[in-house]
Structure formats: C-alpha cells, structure tokens
Image 1 (tube, helix red, strand yellow):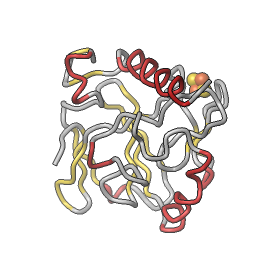
Image 2 (cartoon, rainbow, N blue to C red; image 1 turned 180 degrees about the horizontal axis):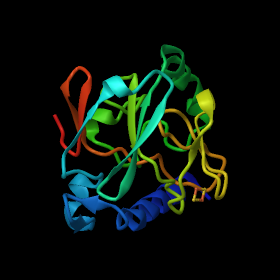
Image 3 (tube, helix red, strand yellow; image 1 turned 120 degrees about the horizontal axis):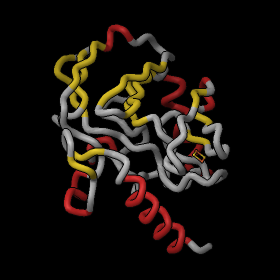
Image 4 (cartoon, rainbow, N blue to C red; image 1 turned 180 degrees about the vertical axis):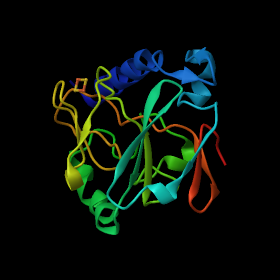
Length: 177
Ligand code: FES
C-alpha cells in the first residue's frame, strides 16, 4: 500500500472510529463537528498531586477511559529517537487539540493525557513501562506520547481530548485554554 493509500485509510478509520466518541456533552461526532473531532465538553477537574512520576491513572469521563501519565525526563527525551518507526510521528493524521500537536503530544511535556482506546478496534492498550503501550487484541504498539508504531494494524495515534491547566497542578478535562 502506498503512502497516499495509507493516509486515506487512516482518515477513513478515524472517521469511523470517531462515531464512538462524543463531541460536546452528548452529540455524536460527525463531519459537522470535524473541527473539534477530539472529545471536549463536560469539564472535569483533576488534582495532579495524585499523580506520581511514572504512574498511569485512568479516569472515566463522558463514558471514555482517559489516561493521565506523568512522564520522566528520560522518557520525554527518548521520544525523539523513535520517529522513523512511527506511522504518524508528527500527528498530521491523528486527532488532538492543535496545542498538543508536538512530539510529546501534550500541553506540558511531563503530563500525557489521552483516550485509552486503541485506534484499531477500540481495545484498551496496557502500559509496558518505558516501552510505551501494547494493545492486547492485535498487538498494536504506541510510544509514551500515544504515537502508533508501524508494526501492528492501528492506523493512527491515540486520541487526545481537550484539556487545560487551571493551576500548575490542576488539570481540567474537556476545556481548552
Ligand atoms: S484493537 Fe488494538 S490492535 Fe486491534
């Protein structure tokens, strides 16, 4: 499959997968809210003091599992070395707020926020330490920024929801700065 076909496939799968997510508090995602195709709405505040380094916490928000991970400086530094083996290293064909379209896919490098559902068929990947995440269903792999590896069938990076910081250690899911 050539690069154009891969991109078309990623867009089709994202469009299909998006129907499982919500846009705003209750509206199912459609092309009409494609400008905000990542989940937002129903703000939920979280105190990051409960999140030690290296720990992954999962919140339920709008019926979705939302991951919060505090990455170490070494884990953040290691992200640069992986890009040749990633499907979409610059997140051009993945869903995230524009402020999170960067190497670490987050507002602040140390805090990673993502929807914990595989972009292949929606299984729940598991954290494998500093190696990233592995989906048990068909062995797709993601790095610690939720960027998918070329091996495995998942077509796009993990979805990043809207969020903002209300204070240094207080994050609000569902709203943008
Ligand atoms: S659902 Fe994750 S690899 Fe298929």
